[in-house]
Length: 193
Image: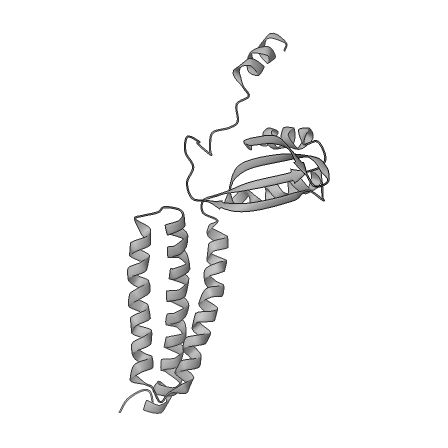
């Protein structure tokens, strides 16, 4: 005598397992892509292995139970839910860096000083837009600091235009090292306490 009725197993348990398997493999796919984008060569293949293994298990259950239309819906629902779960995991991890570009018609001196005082490294250039002179401020920021950076921008100028773009790699920059003013400015501060 079995513990679970065969019909319950086929029509309830298998679709639930397919649903859960799809959530896992699609979430792993999202993480794998993030690791590939961020150049994490050690983790991406490992995640890809488990992603493919879980997918094979799920699709084999679909093929073995072709008459079970609930399994089709479980497969599709698991895929959709896996995308959502993967996006939540990606937000929580906030791995890597982004470049934030701010374009403002107001002179950006105060914004730059505020960002530097909070240990952000910025580069600024003067530009010309359709409405005249603009300041363009660039900063490479950890993904986990995006919201804090944007709040500083909005305090400076709520109408400032900004974009956020992924950065694949950074050269010759230690993001954990605090900002040091140029040597001349440090020397002048030493002379004039």
